[in-house]
Amino acid sequence: MDGDGEELTAQETALYDRQIRVWGADAQRRLSKAHVLVYGMKGTVAEFCKNIVLAGVGSLTLVDDRVATEEAFAANFLIPPDENVYSGKTLAELCCNSLKDFNPMVRVSVERGDLSIFDLEFFSKFDVVVVSCCSLSAKKLANDKCRKLSKRIAFYAVDCRDSCGEIFVDLQDYKYSKKKRDETIECDLKYPSLEDALSVPWSELPRRMSKLYFAMRVIEKFEEAEGRSAGEVSIADLSGVLKLKKELCTAQALNESRVPDALLERLVTNATEFPPVCAVIGGILGQEVIKSISAKGDPVKNFFFFDAFDGKGIIEDISSK
Image (tube, rainbow, N blue to C red; front, top):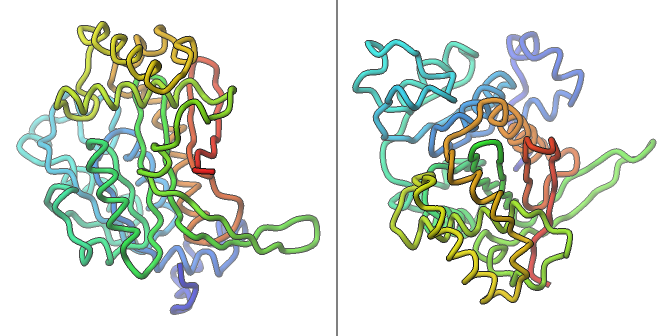
């Protein structure tokens, strides 16, 4: 992201004084000029939005035309628990109203539409795109559109199921700086698209690859094959998911033990989010977006996984050789 732009106002400098002390005035200035698009207002994304609004992002645009239900606010603290307030309103509208209260200096707005129909001109208005609650094909299409633009757009896809979460990152050709002892080092990373990353044969991946990577791909494929919406699985689908796992492992020449049945059962038994995990994944995502905007610090390349069962966060670099 281009670092040129207006200086921080006196009001911004006073409001963000503490974080300016942490990451510097230049990083805060870049953040205050950045425009972020978020598609899919689930609990994990709500945590992310809260974090970047408090950090002082320039603008945040929300897209989620689903009508709010009682089930939706189980993990999404931005939705008021009063049915009289949320009745008939979309998730994006309700979350927008709540986020404006966190930081009046951030412009929070709502757009309507399906992710797959937005054109290049629409995406060109943003510096960061975060997608969730959509099909694998929709994620790939959005990622591809971001890559076709002349400007570099940081793309993130996030998913959280039960006590597990995943973040995919595509920063394209990304240049950044980091401190090493008393010197500043300039770095350059090249990221694959989501399509290219997922095309890497499973047999070529490291033996210690996160089991969650394979499990998420199996469920993703199952939802796609069955024409389901993201997260639309239940324990009744377990036999079909296990059957697909066997087929995929055979086709990919992967030992079936690398994708434990117990993990798949957990993910389909409760496809909704576990609020504490939302806080972890949303916090990591916010941190990564701030890094990409400020161009400071080592970013995730290119997958992050978290499982509350062992409390570990794992970074995996899945790229074509």
